Image (cartoon, rainbow, N blue to C red):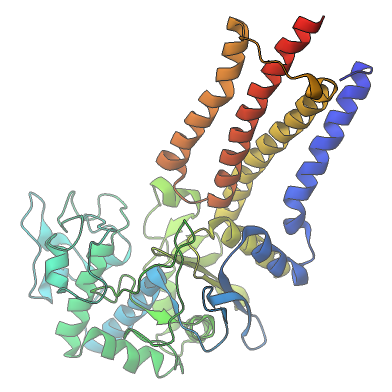
Length: 462
């Protein structure tokens, strides 16, 4: 590009800054407008956002309950709570403890007949508290290979007959944190054996009914919204063979009723809720990026209490601020919604004068780096295309030199490395951004190849 170096640099910086402003524009929107802007920017299929403070809960809905049939998401549709179900399970256990003269530090096998496969570790040392705080030493077992409605028994899942992981102790109880769906299944046996009621009946009787959570259920509902996977395809209808780890179907309004009930002591005592929200252990691995501690059936983030839910085609999160008696719940039917959820969480927290959630800060930091890379690559491509404009009509491919071959290979190597990093390390946490960067890197590689052809041709002309 002709012109003084300072002018060229100034134009480059202006383009770069303009692109950054464009990328961050949704986050800079006013709170009352930002949610719809975020839903549209990230292409979320459907989302509901419920919040309450001193007033009653209010919910806004965006997008579709079923995209193919054009059915809008509204208050009549139930959504998958996924692992938010674990908070309900913890509340049920605290209620059971208050009502049946058992304690958090009772060994689980003092109260249930079912036992896991023997291991080198002391299974009799596993307590109720260990399970609720993910310190049981039992494998996580988060992947289930189960036919949609041919529901196997819980026992067969725990034994590895219908799951990718057999539930077994891999370390001593209380030794370390490991998020475990499998261990939470044992809590269903505990509730049933101590109370004499099916787990689902106990929860409905002692939690849903008192809190008027009329839309919440563990039975597969007719009005369940369609979920969408990372490719944007509908997830086939399915049920889990368990309830406590992630089998709840509910709405944002019902979850708000549950959270408010915890604050005002409607179901369990304030002392029990305080126990739930005390730090039991420090988080580790991925969970350390978004929380400052692990409670009982909840995660802690400084003064906030929260939990997320992730399934094959859904993502959700609630954030509760007990001292200020306010909360918000974000529910989606879109597996690609991670960046949306954590950006929306940041906007909602700011609008409530609360600190930014730890995970939102981490996500926005990563997003800022990726946005910066994307903006730099786009700016570079625009400059390369501009410098080629004078010879577009005289394309005459020539064999590249060794230096040009190296220059050509760099963006393709970067693209390959990025795809590897994305699948091996980033999972789907920033799916939208990683998709964008993958496309931009591919376009940059193609642009670089075209530029080298023109550069070689210009050399021939001169």
